[in-house]
Image (cartoon, rainbow, N blue to C red; front, side, top):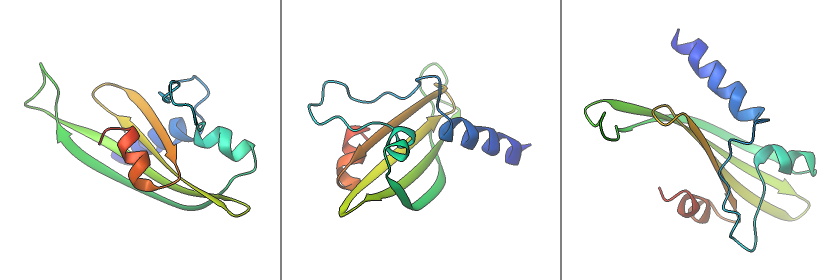
Length: 111
């Protein structure tokens, strides 16, 4: 059952057609989602997935929440980008952030 859940989450992350990504539109140098970048010709060089356990949010603070984190490294010509995609099981949200460094992408997600 867990493999099926992870598979479903992976499918939703890669085919994010419903606009669930929460990019920072107020940023002047907004970078789109991984799917948009791939459509623009960016190539995925590296992809890492991991599941993080974090404490639950009120009123479920006694429960663990699972966060699926997928890290992408993309290239287009001589340019490189790092993207983080997070699926939060408790909030049922997908958040994405892309930046020129992994640290900046993590900062956008306020990790």
